[in-house]
Structure formats: structure tokens, C-alpha cells
Length: 370
Image (cartoon, rainbow, N blue to C red; front, side):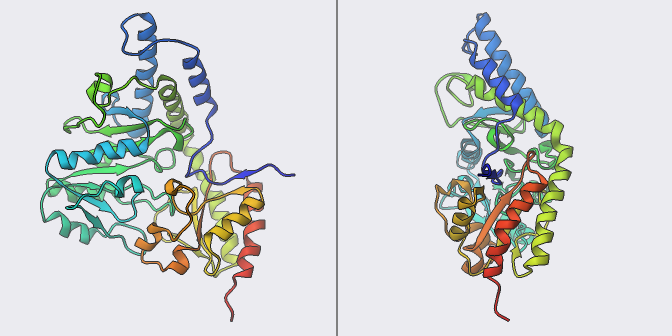
């Protein structure tokens, strides 16, 4: 029996060896990072070293990082600034649920085009209505489409607004420099880059008036109460450092993704590759096979020992028409028949061959009648 094949890296990544080593070392020691004795100072050093490592990955400084319990918490904390400062929320139509579920009565959704890119003209019209907090993801988890964040930030700032980006799918896949992009806020997540689950980071411009979601002690500069997850944070830092060093290798991953898509175009040109004409990260393919519901495709792959997904991994096991693809104007025949294949640093040529050996027969059975 062949070992299982993991092609769902956008949902979560394997733990990097460097992250595991950092976590094991932290777990072998005792010490609260808020304590002033030697044990506490050593734990504090681990947290601050990791803070600098994460900051380096995103083009910011250590003090701009607030560690959180994950990307969802960081998104919620970022978007809570709108209510605290009387600003409207403008949210991209293809955002992650942890952003879209923060909508309020006065929020508005920024539409995207069929290419998955934010409609900049529509954004301009929404910005005229007054200062806003705008949240647009850097990279879509389902399609891999990269948003033009610098152009978005320029427009928002000209209207006196703030810009947040959920960048959990961008870090380590493309160069991501929050400062150079002109962002005010950004979100990262450890488990998307080879770190542990349950740790994230909110990045903020120094002048931004952040407020805590969790209140209590003075941890994280009073921006996130509760004793820090020292081992998780240490793993996050080590993963960030390894991710930064490995960024050039993503060209090889992109070549694998392109080989996968080229084979499908040749053998099954009726398969729709979502976002193929837009800027995309190199590890993601969104494949729609009209007439083949996504859940039946996932079952076939699972029986073959191959892990792929449909929609966001935060859909709690539900398989339905993707809201992301629906927002792009695609009907249920496509939005309900799309799967996501996402590759990573351990993906090999033979893995692509194995995926195609399973997928192409599925595609052949769904070939349109001529």
C-alpha cells in the first residue's frame, strides 16, 4: 500500500524540523515570560527572538508584532478597530470567513471581477462615503489569486482610511513586505508556514491605535492578555526564519504546479482552472469539473490516499458551492464542482504523477458530449 499523499498545504502545513526543535527546547524548560527571575527572562528571550524572526519575514520591526492564538483572532482584533474609532468596514468579497463574519450593519462588501481581483473602481466609490477600515487578503486560499495590495492601499490612504490584509497564505509563498506595500495592519499564522497550529500574529503600523480583544494582564504590551504560548511562539519564530530562507525554492514548486495544470489542459481541456489568467501564488490550483460535485471528487481522492480539499478548511467539513467562486460570478455548476490542490516544499514530481493518475480518469468521465 502506498503512503498517503498530502496535497492540502493551504489548509495547514507539516511542522518544519526547525520549529519542532525550537518547541521541544522550550517545552523542556520552565518559566513564565512575565517573571523577572532567570527562568522567566530565558522564556522572555525565546518570545522576543521569535518576535524578531516573524517581523523579518514581513518587513516590520519586532515591536509591531502582537502574538495571538491564531490568524482568526488576529483578524478579529484588527477589524475591531473600525467600531472603536467610528469607521466603516469594507471587506473584500472573497475574504476568509474570519474576516467576513466580522461584518456589521454599516459594513460593505467590495466586489471582485471574474478574475478574482478586487474591483478598484467599486472600491473608489465606497471610499468616497467616508474613512473606512478596508480588509483585503493578500492571497486567496482557494484560488491562489494575489491581490494588488499596493494599489489598494494607495486609494484607501488618499481617502483617509486604514488597510488590513489577511496575509496568512502569502507569507513564505511570495515576498511579503507590509511596510513596502503601505499596509496599516496584517495577519500571519504559524501553521501556514510550517509552525504549530494555534499561534498567529497581528502586525500593525507604529502609529495605529490598537486595542486589545482579551483584557487582563499586561502581556504583549497590554494588547493581548494571557501568558504567552512560549513553545508555540518559539516554533512560529523558527518556522518564519526557515520560511524566509526557503522562499527562492518556491520557483520549483510553481514549476510542479504548472506541470500539473499543463497535463490537465492537454488531456482534459474542459476542466476549468480558476484564476489561471490572474497573478497567483505558485503552489495552488483550483480545478472545476462541471458535472462532478466536489464532495464526490474528494471521496475518490481520499479512497486513493490523496488529500486535497474544496473551499476553505474552516468550513468544518462541509462541502458546498464555494462562496469565493460564487463571488467571482461562477454558477453552482462550477462553484460546487471545484477542488483545490495545494503543494509545498516536500512535494515531488512523482506526487504530481500520482495526482494526475487519479484526476484524469475522473475528468474523462465528465467529458462534455460533443
